[in-house]
Length: 530
Ligand SMILES: NC(=O)C1=CN([C@@H]2O[C@H](COP(=O)(O)OP(=O)(O)OC[C@H]3O[C@@H](n4cnc5c(N)ncnc54)[C@H](O)[C@@H]3O)[C@@H](O)[C@H]2O)[C@H](O)CC1
Ligand SMILES: [K+]
Image 1: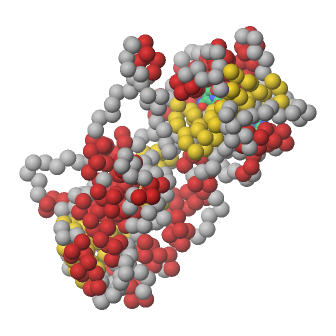
Image 2: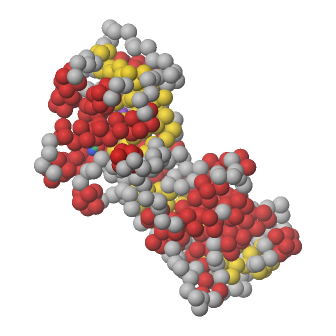
């Protein structure tokens, strides 16, 4: 499972790699810079546009100089700038400065006195000012250069990090961060890219495998992971020939109120569609006909007339998903509290179940261990109070899940699943999922998976992954705006098929060319997150 490593660990991985392979750091930088050059060359294919490379004087700047040298040697139109920002110059930066001179290229020094180089919107900017080593907010000349780059409208490719973005803490001066179109980050995903507060600093990003020591990375301890297909696929359970519906559990969805029966419709339909053996909707009477006609595959138990009050479930439920469209009527709150006091069944709590708990926090103690909570950020804020920034939010997420031994799915781009103090970020999905009822479907999917005896932690990870995947697969025929919550359910089969499908073998372009093969598409061989 791809680990998100800390800055300290990444530096230690460098050291381990250099030591183990008996190479010097300059060799590692040459390798890294060459990979970045190859990435650019694969896409530009000799295009004569102007490439403006802005370098700091640390190792990120060193990477920039390696890229500049290779581009120059391949005949690209390169302008290399060094921001003369103090006396610190890393050893390998200086070495690469000399290597650039050896091929007859003198990088231009940007000083406080000099005019900033003109950057056209047709240029490509390579941002190699700061990477992992950013220790304070960029000021004075560096800030000026960053603002200059941001104002240019050029395509900006950041190396490792958009300069000015910290790896592990929040930005304090939002104008002194490069706003990249794309970032090539090294070896592991970075936590900073998964946080909504950093959404403007890079539109897309991808991880370049720079070959850091695998053993070090394997042994490195972390509390942050990014979930990919290879992490979800092994969880999937194939059905046996002689299996029958009794083996796949009974999911109950409790919720709904007058005017909000759609939520239960979507949840129950999702639960049956993901494979729960039986599904029952426990709803107010006003929704009886609606549910019976819209989801004929499921059973219905009714409660009070227009909202949930009694919560008397007469079913041997494997798991109960509760809260969608339920409302917070005073009688519903009373009934829900009594229900929690008696209930022993694992729960998936969403929407109004969470809203009621937010107003009566002691109810959390009644939630069975390993239950799954699926708040969106506003519901999470009601549960834990305001956070100072996204790092603080994640801290609150870890501690709440740990304290109550529950699994929390904090929904959003890169939904974060908290379990035993660790965070697992989802890699699938797109803005098509920002649509009414999307969360109700997720509740149904997770509930339906738990009914089939998936562990709630597995169900949360798999459910969130598949839910996100549907939106990606649907984009062959739909656009973000026309994708609605029912489409998530319609695309569940495709998402599962995609999960089980073998990845096509990727042929790196160089290899493909040398074998006189059909050319690989530029994107192949790298993973991109949009
Ligand atoms: N394992 C890897 O990922 C590899 C990464 N490489 C590249 O190296 C950089 C990290 O290099 P480092 O020299 O440690 O840091 P930076 O280049 O980001 O800059 C450090 C430099 O700048 C000074 N500084 C920090 N903040 C400021 C500021 N606001 N104003 C002025 N000066 C500042 C700091 O004191 C240092 O002197 C990584 O990101 C990759 O790009 C390797 O190429 C290979 C392996
Ligand atoms: K950078």
